[in-house]
Length: 106
Image 1 (tube, rainbow, N blue to C red):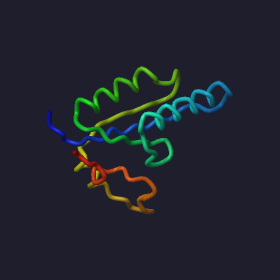
Image 2 (image 1 turned 90 degrees about the vertical axis):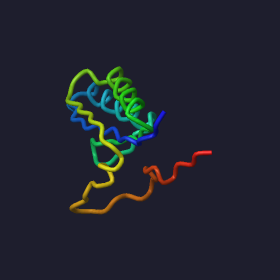
Image 3 (image 1 turned 135 degrees about the vertical axis):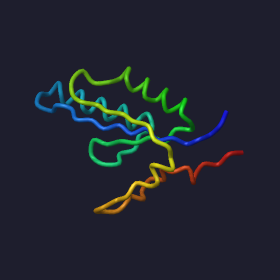
Image 4 (image 1 turned 120 degrees about the vertical axis):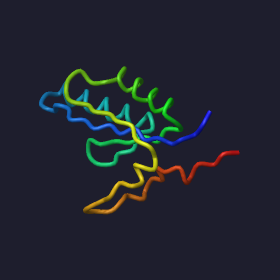
């Protein structure tokens, strides 16, 4: 098995007009956090995956927990493409280490 780190990005726009909508929004957001997704921006989350197979499994798992209404987009990119991301305004948050640099293989 090869390890070619991938990134799964999830972008969503969910309705928040009713209490039921807000409950689904919170449920979906909590699902993302519990499953290792890190907030990149509001409504944009990312997760590091070991390879394309685990990235695809993460997307399939996400499909099983999608909200009823709204708009959810996922796409998968390589870690190298992710690291080439250019921040135009602001700076990258350093509170959470979300790169493969912290990975220790024994």
